[in-house]
Image 1: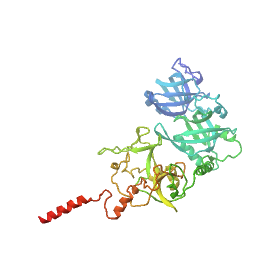
Image 2 (image 1 turned 30 degrees about the vertical axis):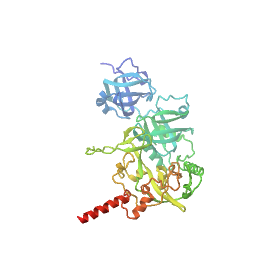
Image 3 (image 1 turned 90 degrees about the vertical axis):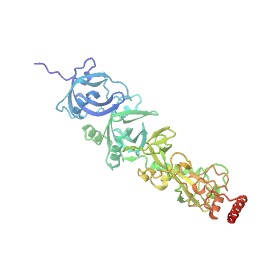
Image 4 (image 1 turned 45 degrees about the vertical axis):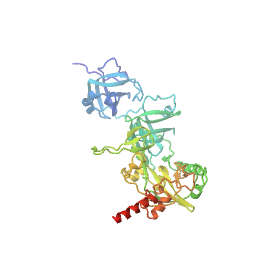
Length: 488
């Protein structure tokens, strides 16, 4: 009778042969795709001694072995290859990495231990630049003491959410943590709904980042595993050893930063003199000032929003649909970004309001951009549109009148001598550089395209500003033809 082959500890396996036999627990598994290897199934395995190793199931073996790969279960694995573990984002400290082969056999076995085999890193070792290597992923356990608002970024042409939070350990050491992608919603919702309860974060396979000499941790793509308020013995022991003081969970971007923002805005306003609207027309050069005014109306002859590229934040233009083109279901609208010089569907609408304003000395028009307009309206342009981006569809690329369906004069005939624009830093009105003559009607709004003479002609009965008065010689010829025609 042949002797039963004993299991080899993970610490003892070497690459000089393939017929190894190990008994391991699948601690974590995930699917990964790269340009060179295609789709693979990745695992972190642990034996009874707590040794961890990274294992890969390549594409040819996925269909055969994937059904046996279940996180949290024990397996017996026979026949596999080992290669040197190098490069960034190494899942374990083990010197080698496992790869399944055609002869690999994975079989079920009863559970040996309920241990989750954490490899927790201490905060001081993470924060010390001479401490842990940034190339090896770690397990982090901490209490969330503060978090920021969610932010949206364009990463590799994909819209990705980001959330920053701060963790503390049992010694009250603090560590910054940044979460990306699918981890953001889980953490943000847990913090929002925590109330007075503690939020304990367990982040497995976290990577160490260094920026300007300060170290922090973040999830490593989809390799990482985030568990909040887990009931593992190691987590319960951590909670029991936390300092007895009650640290309220705070949002860092709330009142303190809001007060600072208001103070910065006030300081910004104080840099410029206060003027009346009539006083603006006395300017002989470009400058900035503050005015207190009332918004009379919004000029709807212009579109009230524009599209901004998420990648460079510059203006992007909607690409017209090709006539008789068959539009595929679910196809996104494309936009042209002159700055990036590429077509992209990643845009966001932003406000650009052309409003009429007045004070007790006069009236004029000004442009209000996205940030300031949102403060007035209370919602973003994207929320107001609710995804319906075809509301303004007559203006495409450029400013030529040929790109408009119809050109009509504005109903309002106000005396607009100037255009103002709202500075992006705040609701400060900026005098237009085009208006050096205080008496010249140089407003660029549709209602001021006509000169005062053309308006007078309209009032006197002229139907179009393009009509010309008949000169005396032409009138004489017309009368002569009428007389000769009557004689005949």
